[in-house]
Image (cartoon, rainbow, N blue to C red):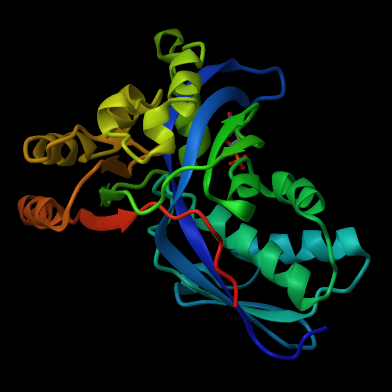
Length: 291
Ligand code: C5P
């Protein structure tokens, strides 16, 4: 076991496109999505301890209620060891927004603890543990750009130019049991066959970083605008200003416009000032950063 503290950056993700094909017998839905990591990150620091401790700067997310706890327990069980580590989580990614914040923390903890405990697990073995923790966790173990199929955990990675700037808007809306509620609110008309997302995934525009949110889509858009209080207003005000249209990320309520720039971010922040929504200018990023 290492004694030096180890630090991992847990990058947020956006869904550049997300189609839902239909409901499965196991309660999940089959989806076809393009996931992309961006440089808005939580910071995970692992250091030595006699027991498992998870300490988060958001007090509601300290201890056993943090998915990072489950990640540590699952990884230790897989390796047949007792989980001993202190894991600090600095939250920068808004929670329950559709940006994969909790999943990114779990993925960064798996990567970090694999090194901290000298387990030597391959990416494939880490992915098997990751998929038990949540549908988005496997993608976030490596990040970059990938097509996700099945429940989102069957991955095909591709190489894309990084550094594309996008505006992320995070409305303050939250609802209980968000992801199951949004999946449950989908109607037959919201389902599609995934072909548009697959086409975008294989397009030259995606590879060369020339993609714009005009070609992005998300099956949750109708349901999210109906369900999240205030999303409609934030969406309309943003789309009145930005050059490219908003596209929802995950099950929302966060959405993005791309490409974008600092001037556009500042104008959107100004127009959303009284709504409590946050506006970030982020860049696509393709490599996990662990030190
Ligand atoms: O996998 P994750 O823990 O993120 O899923 C949370 C819930 O979201 C699931 O229990 C399920 O109700 C719903 N879900 C779904 N189809 C998916 C992913 C999630 O129905 N592909």
